[in-house]
Image (cartoon, rainbow, N blue to C red; front, side, top):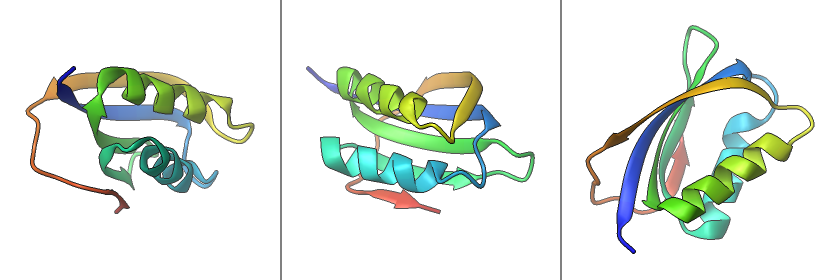
Length: 89
């Protein structure tokens, strides 16, 4: 199964609730690459790369947090990059 890369914007109560560090922990634990950062409009932007089932597994983990409240997600496929590790920006 080949890797994919997605640019995802999370809307809802996603800042000030540990979202970025939860995302980093989940990504590292399942071997995904990319980055996550807060945006000025209150959303969180993420680029994540790996096998699609693992990206879905990460998304499920983010949805299970009792502090994070994702209202909706905008996602698009983007070209895969040479990247390793997952960073908080």
